[in-house]
Image (cartoon, rainbow, N blue to C red):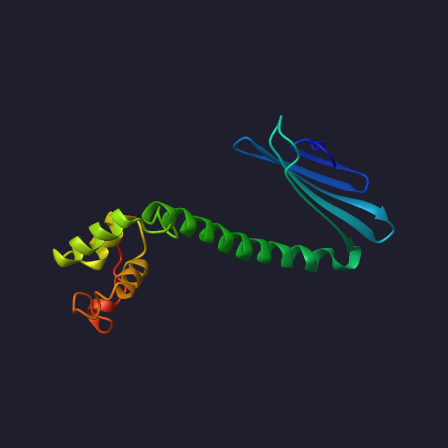
Length: 163
């Protein structure tokens, strides 16, 4: 099934085909009898006018169709839900910590140290610098500021502070 070959719902001898539209995306699913007792299943996802996108194919024995269908339904729901959550978390973290992983400049370090000495909290510093609270703690610790008592290494002050 290359390109969109399914009508919204189509059944013919040995073939069941279903098409849905999700925004600009078109998803086609087809199950075809390819031999006695054997079916090929195929999923294609595409956006009209763009190169082919998602393509998943496989063979299933007729005796396994019902159990494979139940299994795929459950697994797709669980796996795709988990992946969607990871994607949401990554997008949220990118908004909260846009500078995550970047090297500190000398100017940023100087500003960080001045703000710490001025009494700003780890959460305030994380928001101001676009970095995780642990990254702020790590940088302060490597600069020896924790030893000066400006940042506790243990206890309540060392716990994660949500920006």
